[in-house]
Structure formats: C-alpha cells, structure tokens
Length: 285
Image 1: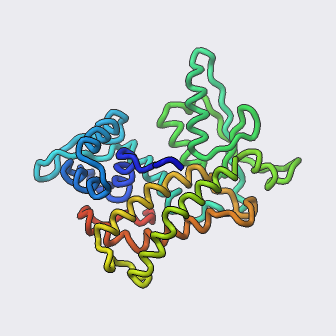
Image 2 (image 1 turned 90 degrees about the vertical axis):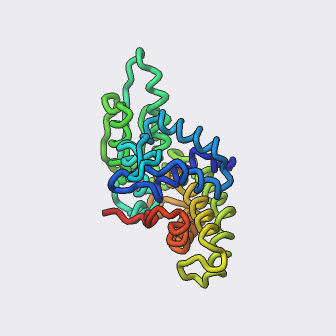
Image 3 (image 1 turned 180 degrees about the vertical axis):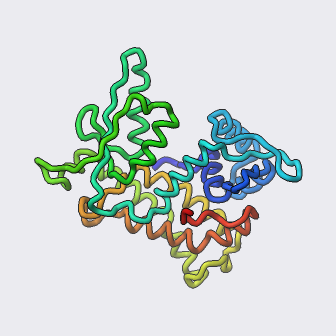
C-alpha cells in the first residue's frame, strides 16, 4: 500500500476522533499545527490542507471562545463522520441473514459524467458489481448509501432495492465475482504488518492496561492517530460480508482486533496530549 498518511488525511482523522465538539467549537489553527507537527507535518502543509478541506465544504472558518482563528466541521462533514463511525467501530456489520441492498442507476447521456461519479462513489461505499449496471452490498450499508447519494445530489438517478440471493451459484461463490476478496485481504495484511507490532510493543509497556506507560502521552497520540488513519479506509474497501461467505483464513477479524486493542490502550493518553477532550470511542448515542 502506498504511503497513506497525507496531511489532509491526518487532519480528517484528527477531526474524526477529537474535533466533534457538540457546540461546534472550532479547533484553533495553532492547535492543528501543534498536533500535526507531532506527526512530522509542517505548518505550511497544514494550512494548505485545511484550505482544500474548506473549499470542499468539509471545514468552516470560525473563532474560538477566546477569539482565536480556527476551523469547525461543517454539517456535511459531521454526517460523513457519523456514518464513518458505523464502519470504523463496527458492532455487527457481519451479521448473517440481513440480505442485500441493490443499486440500479440510469443517467441521461447529457449528464454522462455523473455515471463515473456514481460508479466511483458506490465502489467507495463498498458495493460490488453483480452485473452491468447492478451494484450490490450488504443491506447494513443502506442508510449510509442513502445519505451519501442525497448529499451528492445523485439520488434522482438511482433506485435502491433490498433482496435475497436465490441462485443459481452458491452465494459464497458469487461474492468472489462481485468483489476482489484477494485485494481486500491484502489491505488487511498490510495494516497488520504496520500496526500489529505497535500493539505488541504497547501491550508490553503497559501490561495491557489503558494508559501511557513509559512511552508517554505524545507517543500514544502519534500511534493512535496513525492507526486510525490507516484503519478508517479498510471498512470502506471491505463491505462487511457475513463471515460464512468469507475464506476461512480471512484476516479482517484479526486486523479489527489489533485496531480495537490500540484504540482501547491509547485513546485516553492520546486525548490528554491533544488537550481537546475525550477521544471518540465508537459508541453512538
């Protein structure tokens, strides 16, 4: 996997775990620069990336209570992050028997550029291709799909259906055609190669108890945010297929346990270093 920790990606991860103040309080620019510096990102790169996120409508400029310049999440970004929580901190994404959601779209020739946008977005949501023009995903992705297509104003072109797979091939065989399972497994293996040694090291330092141990809060913050930045892409590449439909040696569960272990051990000391309140835990109210 190519190096994924770009300044813009790290800023999104930072806001996702620390920047969702219920009152919409902006994060001061000076704090963003400090927190990204701990990850080796210089101030010009932070400012440039924040500007791009503002142009995309994900961040909005504002002032903190003491008058400092800062940026808060837009309503659109909050919805994206809330949807993302269902993937990043899954409860039962692989529950069997939920069925499937199908997306069928038709775009007029005069707007054919939207066909590529639709295909790209459905792929990024985790949909596979069951047949030309027919996209499929586990039914658990319905709500997020609906939010996303409406946000992008693509919903007039799409019909969504729920259904069951009734044959003729066995469903476990069919999903191997609908998704590139080998490519998804390779992403999980890459995550494990990067972050499983980090979990082992922190477990040795802390004895498995949440806290900074000898590594210190800054190290905890760095390793926590890097793990989150790596992990948050994987539940989008992986649609969350039921375990019965996956190969016996599927690495997704092991990778999820590594991320959960790092999150549990490091979120509190990481939040202390960030100084921005309790980190997002993944529980949803």
